[in-house]
Length: 198
Image 1 (cartoon, helix red, strand yellow):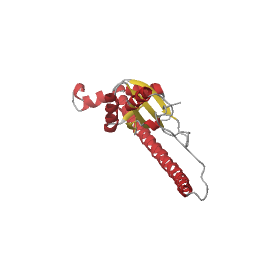
Image 2 (image 1 turned 90 degrees about the horizontal axis):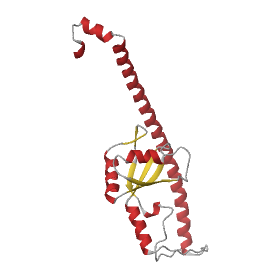
Image 3 (image 1 turned 90 degrees about the vertical axis):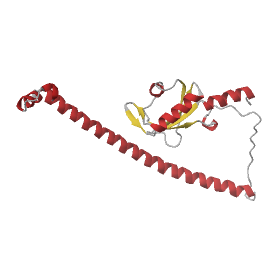
Image 4 (image 1 turned 120 degrees about the vertical axis):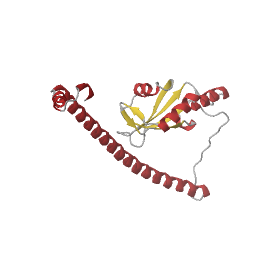
């Protein structure tokens, strides 16, 4: 059933206010994403896009609808300029303007008619369809390779962040230990330095 022109225009306005965000952590929920973005903009709706290629442990993507078009533009610029913090860790999140094809519940465009037919082997379009089928398989293999590479990079990033966190924790423990066992006071007395300056 075709949508009316007014319904389709309202849908297009919704698309313009929506931002596509990908490379989100698999642990990110709607509430986490809203909390991260609410400090910059007013989030109206969050819709996660299912990953049909390889659903386990892959970064997620989401369509995030803002209140206004200006807010959508602002969040795209903000994410391009600075790291996006999710669950206390920076994520290499990408953001861009959403497109009509990204919505699975989009209404049918008024006046658009789709036709299809089976092709015979002798039909000139059969070779074109066969090439598209081969190209699709090639793209699927390339996508799988890139996703595996991306998962390795994500794992390396997570390990690097964990090592940095452990190093900072050890430094804070050392400082806390020096202050709590009066070593800092003894050193200040030894070198005749007032403790407030140490």
